[in-house]
Length: 135
Image (spheres, helix red, strand yellow):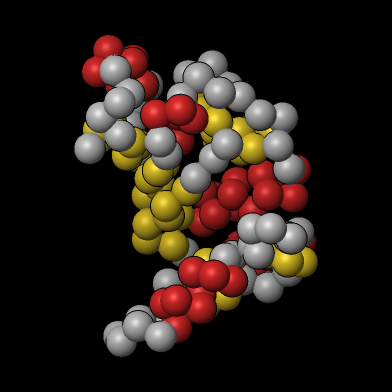
């Protein structure tokens, strides 16, 4: 398992049968996630089977967005390195847009969200390519 999150790496390092690899880089306050060129360079050397990606916002027009350019670059590189990409986000993320775009909706293989996203809206996203799962 590869992560930029110190918290995630710490939890998974204690799990049996899991090898946690923490990406290097500058640690952001608050999120405790690594960013910047060290992180993206490390990611560029991997072939990731499945990436789970979050975002501050997702819209059909602007795709996946985040307010921080350094975070955007890490997420974009993770998607480039991945064979399959799944967006995980609560229904309130849909229709929201932040400053930095790092992927388009067609770049996703699946979207997982809550059942509070209206079925009609989920269908509109699925028309762009990804499978949409409302749970």
